[in-house]
Image 1 (tube, rainbow, N blue to C red):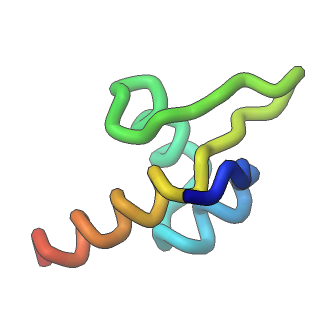
Image 2 (image 1 turned 60 degrees about the vertical axis):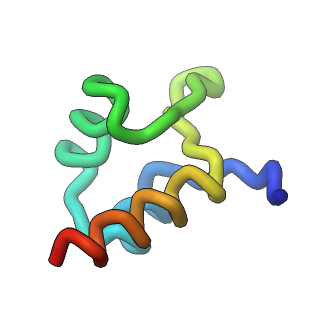
Length: 58
């Protein structure tokens, strides 16, 4: 499993959502995130799981 952390911009591009929406997902624990200094980072496997889940919801 990958330990790669994705930036907010990368997650926005992958999920097709705005930074505001992704930050809300993190705040509401819909997406795991890690505070890295001033930046919010997201574990790549978690983002990919969320992407697959959202595709199934249609």
